[in-house]
Amino acid sequence: MVRSKITMGRLLPAVIMLFMFLFILGGCKTANYGRLESNPDITRAFEAYQIIPDHSYYYRGSASRPIVIVGIHKDFELNSKLWVAVDPKSKDFRSVIDRVSAQGMGGTTRPWGFKIFDQSGRALGVWYSASRAAAIEVNENNQIVNLTPITLATVGNQGP
Image (tube, rainbow, N blue to C red):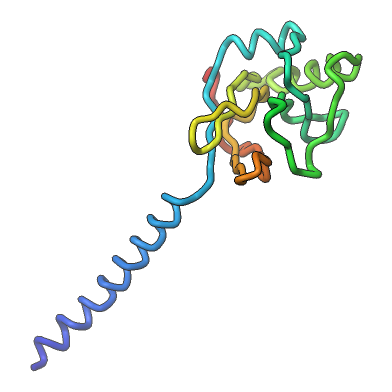
């Protein structure tokens, strides 16, 4: 009888942990997250101030210290107050790119270009930053409801 209490005492927490793991795993599987995919052509396009047709441009951060600039395809709406629209035909566009490009000065991480994809693999737009990771969520109305740079992923990373 003592032996069965010890076994149940060890088994119950293991069963609870298993159910918690399955619950978390199931939640991750249904999440609406996208990804960034490294692309040297996008890096070159931003560095040459090239405008990609059918894209609207935004930056995140202050005008004096933007941390990322994105071009979002016209089929999607960037639904966030944290992003500032910038006219790609203005001097401000070049200035924002120059400031994002300066992020790598004196450090080991330089800005890089990426394609932005939603959870189903649809291309949403382009990304240029020293931040090489992002949380990306798109709802059923093609609204990008979360596009958040994850800056911790950039430490010590030279290339894509």
